[in-house]
Length: 195
Image (cartoon, rainbow, N blue to C red; front, side, top):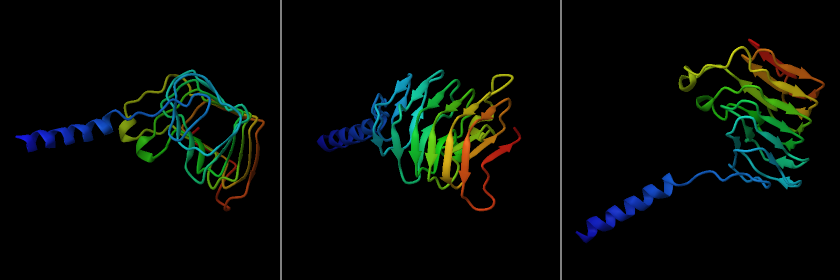
């Protein structure tokens, strides 16, 4: 009986250790895998973090000139949000800085995203990668009519393999960006698909 009770206690402890783990709120000092659920202004500084997930609609993320560096990975995941603004960020060496597709099976649509006044450098791929094509997990998700209406303005993307990719997004504004792309001949500064 004691062995059975001991085994149940170990199993319960093992189960609880995985079920109560949640991502921390980023607050003013971001950490790896933190979330943003309210408008946030980061403390200026140098951060080596990845996978900041924005989970709230109508949220402003002001990097406040903070600098982010990470080899490969993603800085901001904006999937499933509406009305998010990301501004005043400096980021280098990420696989993607802003995306709604941390992996092909986890792609969630994003609407009314504003990306402005940022500097992204030294990236191997796209700095901004937004795809609103459905996956099996999001086949029944309906975008609000009539537009996602992204605004990508006043950003500088240099020394990167590619710049901006937008797929299946209508009525967006891409203006006053500086792009100096050094990727292979098949990489574009701005690549629009069915948009």
